[in-house]
Image 1 (cartoon, rainbow, N blue to C red):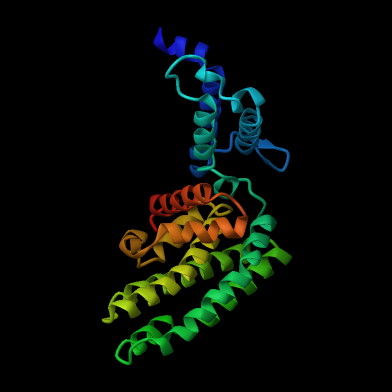
Image 2: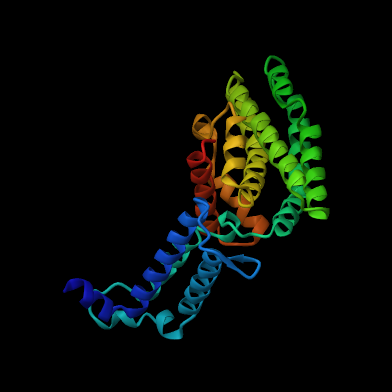
Length: 283
């Protein structure tokens, strides 16, 4: 009876919860390759997700919900607060991680990261000269090839954008994993830097590159099949779990939030969601 009473007393909150459940289940189905059929150029699952997300947006903009009328009863939680929290939870399953995304849209998003990636790599290039003499060779050796790898990744994203073929996608998949592994290995090598200040600086600049590469990886993963993900996972030696102690999720979220012009809280949960996706896929 308490269940029905809660639904009756908090209809908007209950509706939001139901919609979030729909979005979450659709996300799991998409990750498992279950589409439930086609809907136009997308899938039934992606269509349901889009509709549920749109309805959540309407609920969030409801003037009555925003006025906090749930405070009529003494001590009752503010409904608008709950809706705000649930809206953020819903953003844990954004379209970049859903199947049915346009390959062209993903490729364009990757290309849009180009200036930030090139800037981050340029910062890496200048870092060795700032480190102590014993530490500089470690960093230089660990980051050797970053320029070539980043330029190749951008070039392949542009090639896929111009011609979104299966072969172009496979080339893009291979390169993003290759570059991601280079950055991951560099992070583990940077931990060997003896000087504490130098180590912190080295990890910081590598974190910037890692954040962008991991974001690009998540975008590529969103348009990759389960078989392709398995192939990509098999090519990895450095796993995300090995890097977790050295990654700053707040810094990563700040970069994502700035790039997409979105709230930090949303970006933080998107970063966590992407990490979970990678680990679940064997990365």
